[in-house]
Length: 336
Image 1 (cartoon, rainbow, N blue to C red):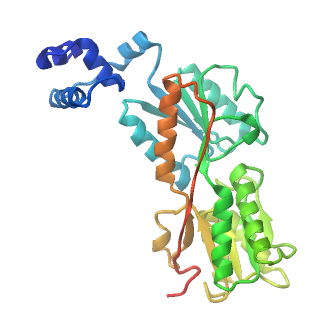
Image 2: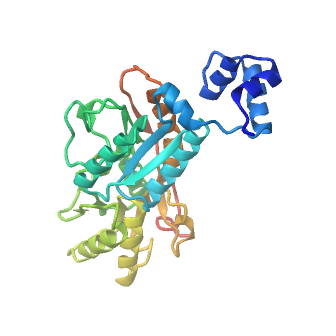
C-alpha cells in the first residue's frame, strides 16, 4: 500500500499541511520539524504523486532545457549539474537539442511549452535577440544560459567571457609570446566576449593583432575539433606564423594542436595553446591542455536556483549572473 502524506503526519504528530509544506520546500517550517519529516519520508520510501501535485498546483514540476548540442562536453556537464540540483527539489529536467539551428530551436521551444514546463532554460542559437516579449507569447518564465542577449533584459547565467579571453591571452603574454592568434566562434555572445578579452589583453600589453591572426567559424559547438584543425592550418599558412594560440574552447584547441603537431611543430616550445572549458579529459591528452575553467558545475547549480525561484513566481528584476573563470596551467603552455 502506498504511503500517504497523512500517514507521515500521523506518525510524527503533525498536520498534513506541515508535511506538504516540507515537501514543497516552504521556508516557514522549522529546521527540526523539516529534518524529522524528511527523515520519516526516507524511512518509508515515500514517493510523491507528481501528477496529483500538478493537478492541485497547476504546475508540472518540470524544467525544460534547450542547448545547441547535447553531446558537447560543456552542455553535457551543465545539464548534469543542473539536473542534480533540480532533483534535490523533486523537479524533473526535460532536455532538447536545437542542433545549432534557429528553426529547430523554435520548434523545441513550442514542444516544451506545450508539455507545460514551469521554466524554460535556453542556450540560444538565434542570430539576433528576440523581441522584448521573449522567445514566445507564452507567459512561462525563461532563463538564458551561456549565451546572452543583453538588450533583452532577461535573466542570464553564464561565464564572464571577457575575462576568459583576458586570462588566456595574459597567460600567453606572461610566457613571453609576442605573436598570439585567436581561433574563435562567430556571432554568439561567448565568442564575441572572448574575442574582446583577447584584443583587450593584447592592447594593454602594446602587442599588435597581425592580419589574419583571428580566425572565426560558424556552428563552432558541433564541429569544434575539425574547425580548430582547419583554422590552425590557415594560421600556419601565414608568412609569419603565431607562436601562441588562444582557442575558443577545448575541442577547438585539441584540433588546432593536432594540426600543429602534423606540421612538425613542438608544443609548447614552438607554439603554445590555451583552450576554454575545463574539459575533464584535458589533463590526459598526449600534451595536457592549459585551459580556462568557467566552472560548469557551479553554473548549473546557480541556474537551478534561479529557475526554481522563477517557478515559484519570483518577481525580482532580471539579473545577469557572471561566474568568474580560472586558469588551469598544463603542458600545452608550460613544458615540464
